[in-house]
Image (cartoon, rainbow, N blue to C red; front, side, top):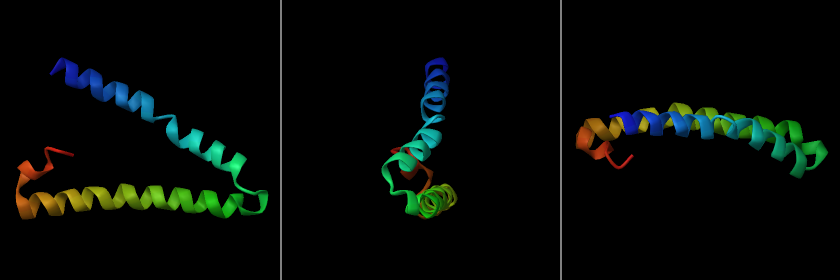
Length: 72
């Protein structure tokens, strides 16, 4: 139990800075005229994934049973 909680905390600490890093890197590699729209698409894709993944995992759990979520 303790190792699991520490692992979850470390994953949060390591994944937390990913969004600002991706936004900054996108601003550097995408042409200046496309930066605003591109960052909008990146943000929208992330939000859609964050809304869609819980729905899909719930649908899987309801159809195949809760044990089907163990690999996730």
